[in-house]
Image (cartoon, rainbow, N blue to C red; front, side, top):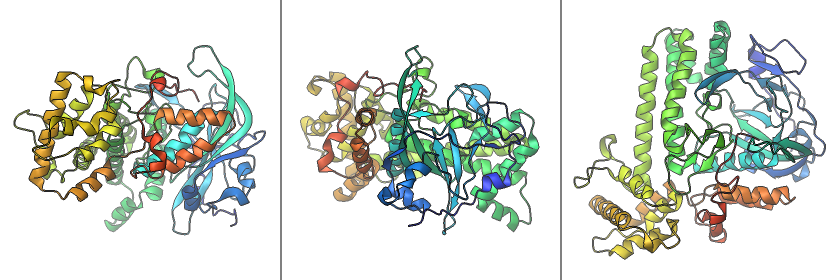
Length: 544
């Protein structure tokens, strides 16, 4: 297969460029991007490869016959048709305006337009400094790159809207990082991930020109986003005999709200914590982007965040993600206000966010519990407890350290017969508890759990759901395998020692997260004790 890819670089062709050709750190005004070449690395080695993503962009599923791929995907070789650049954007970080940020260690190679008219942006993360690198070196280390590569693909196969990852390349260079910002910097192996998405446009791309009063640039960028990535809105305007207008921008905002709601609801369904929901990390396409200090809920705790930078305020904790998404959308609305001119259309968009989030969340819980979709978009309260089944399940999870993933997966094995004994009801759940001896759970937790299980069983019997259908529905909503932090860390440990085999194994396991995989049962186990407080398995910093 030829490596001649059909590049169609709409972003650089249609939007204004930074006129300065040299690569030095600076404020960039009046432009959406700066052209910049990747910085060559010493000895690129292809460590991991996603055949599904390769197929999407028109590359061979088996890279072995093309040794030049390591050169291309490390930035050492630029193919004809590529037009490398770093994007200019700003953003709110931890609730505060940070002004210009931009792609400080990501360089887009170009956009591939496939025969089916799918557009895929190929972006190298860790490819060297750009005008937006601030005090950074533009590089990435192996540990963060392994985590991004694996999680991008794991999230896709879980059904969560996400950017993808094509490749993981070791650079042969060392990168100095202070992992916890405590003065203990040390050299680590470097790596580069090739990220793939229709676009990496984010809220911050629009916030920066608005903050600077560059309203014409804002309009150009919004028109580009709608025309290229939301063409159905352009068709609606044309059908009405209009060009892009205030109502088009408002309709676009509503779509972004709905997509964001769906994405966050999916995060909550599978127990994912993004860790750094700054507005520059929010995609206008509703995709999960920028896998930094993310984490997976082990023992259920809505106040948990994996980000050491956020340890005090816990702004980006698991249970707060829907609220932060709304806050970010308000900032996005502020950025678009000069194009719309009134507040009411944005209020409509925010209502669409709330409605979509609520509907998606209820549908997710119905599937997770093995119930028919809740009628009237409402999970009715139990008259005895005054609490809905969905809300009560979270109370049960939080009553004692309980593995969220294992708990919901095990519910499919809990008997629903009215005459099931207490021990029969609890037996499938023992594996989800983190107590050394689950039989010692407190009487209050035991009573709460049993009451809820009997309430669930009563609902199931009332719906008369065929058992095999219910089990299949639950297994399709409750993954058995998620990319737990300790699994990623084990893969990192081996890769840093020169053995990428666990990366390949985990990639294969995470391709089928809802399936029983008897030969990989060890990867479905709850977090081991050794991983509870180990760096990389519990908390992570924003450092790459």
